[in-house]
Amino acid sequence: MGTYYGVRVVAEAGDREAIRGLVEERLDAVDRAMSTYRQDSEISRFNRLAAGESLVFSEETWAVLELAWQVREDSGGAFDPTVGPLVDAWGFGAPGRSTEPTAPLDSRLAELRRAVGAVGLASEHRRVLKVENGAALDLSAIAKGWAIDRVSEAFAEASYTNHLVEVGGEIRTSGRSPTGDPWRIAIEQPPPRPADSDPGPLGDAPGTGAPPALHRVLPINDGALATSGDYRNYWERDGVRYSHTIDPRTGRPVEHALASASVFHTSCALADAYATALMVLGPKDGLEWADENDIAALLLIYRGDSLEELPSRAFRDRFGPAE
Image (cartoon, rainbow, N blue to C red; front, side, top):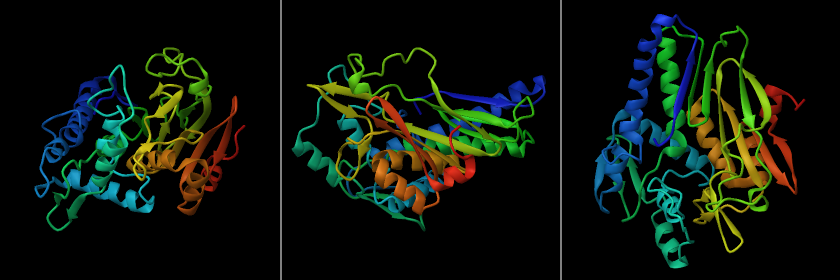
């Protein structure tokens, strides 16, 4: 899925290759089905269809799509698995970002927005219909979390109860670390507002080669933590900063002051999707949505040269106030 993975398992040294095989089997299955970086994946094959054509999905891909569609409805469209063409148009998708990205014309955005949500789901057959030309699916904001859940479940079935699984920065833990203590999972400290900090030619946040500063470290025995941020992937043109977080409801990059959203959940797939939805909703609407839906979320907001921590009620109940 265009990113990296890593695992830590408390096990005998001789189990290393068996563990590696188990991990790669689960991750390869998700990659073959849901990666937009693979032309032979189910998602890529659907995206090449013309309007009026349909594809029957495998049980696993269908389960992820149904889950994504539920988050789409719950978030009022802030999370949307059909936003991919808009992400591509702004230069942030799987095709890659050019050295000179530009904002798409309003007419092009209007055309692309007509394709948002333009798919039909027939649950009795796991069939997805493409309603409009240009409509496409992109599960990248939930599939990484799903893959992590599948690997963690496979470890549990194989009696590796103490483990940590990470794919692209999203993490799920089970049991305890090798020291016997809870796993300690860090939330990164966003750098100063990127637009004010001498970005590189493509707007990459400065200092990304150095170890990131840590905002907070959470003890987690069993659960997942996913973070979506707005400070690494962006570009600038004529003094305007364009975020990689695209609001499916407007077709444009978000413009609020939310630097990152971190979500704790028992399901890494849902934590992954919720963090993305919160980044679209922004500080005020995001916190209200998290509180209304009992989501344990920590929002970090730019306030001038500093950051404000805004935890949801469920996050405070689970982890307490910042030290």
